[in-house]
Image (cartoon, rainbow, N blue to C red; front, side, top):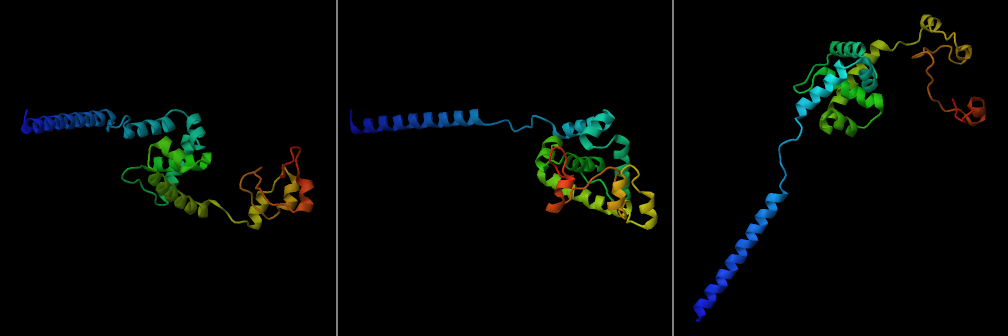
Length: 197
């Protein structure tokens, strides 16, 4: 064998090795690639979830959104009256549902993202949009205390409340708002479980 044959054999060996290496790399890439098609059609899933919330029963709607269907419809209509409009991708009911899910369950945006299949950006955007409109509603719904209003809302069930909260209009009868009590007065307000109420 001459030198020409040795070089040819070496080149053939290198070519076979390179071809084998390329085949192995292609096989490895082919086996590790993921199917890029979504396993769940997000739009269908979101619509089914919303139908489940609105149409299934008042109990499910109340458990998830903390209000029944009639109240939700009324609330959405009031927000529409204040200028809230459906966006290109979300109707008013879904925007309100996102807001109520977060506020009603004291959850984070990530939880709402998982249950509504929306991005964190979308969740955050529409949470703040609805919050802005709810604050606008507050001007209509929250009444400032007047002598007539405070007399009409006197607490007949808890006479002691009338002495301490004489000129205050309560949000809901029996609702107590947490407050800081001075150290010297704390023993008077402790319950059996050692909580201050």
